[in-house]
Length: 144
Image (cartoon, rainbow, N blue to C red; front, side, top):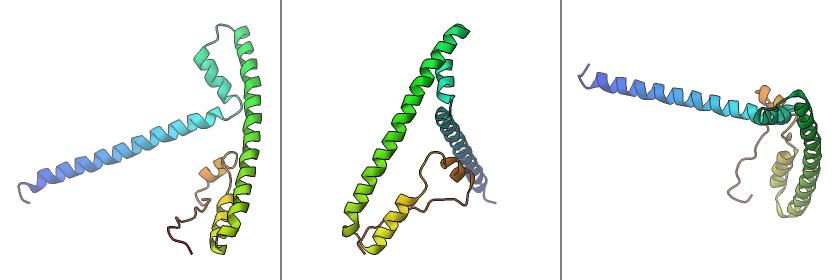
């Protein structure tokens, strides 16, 4: 082995280990953050987070805070559901407008994209089932 080969191999190994550690730690941080965000969407998750931030002084104040936060959370849930209905209606309108402009293959890809599972309740199943991956249409750089 040449005198310069050993230090180069050590340097290369150190670089590869650093890349591996960086990738794993980034993945762990991202997964942790996604779990935090997901927990906010569960019943009581938002209340728990706000209680931790506010730090109620006694049980009475805690009950009052929880009542306000849960009432507001219910309203926000209603607003989210209404927004979803509106987004779905706008998407359907766009599809109807696009249909005559697209080829049959393009329409088929667009329909498949719109029919994929929505985020939300089914998202947990999709994340836990590695075989369940919604097909994303390939980018269509040219017209068919």
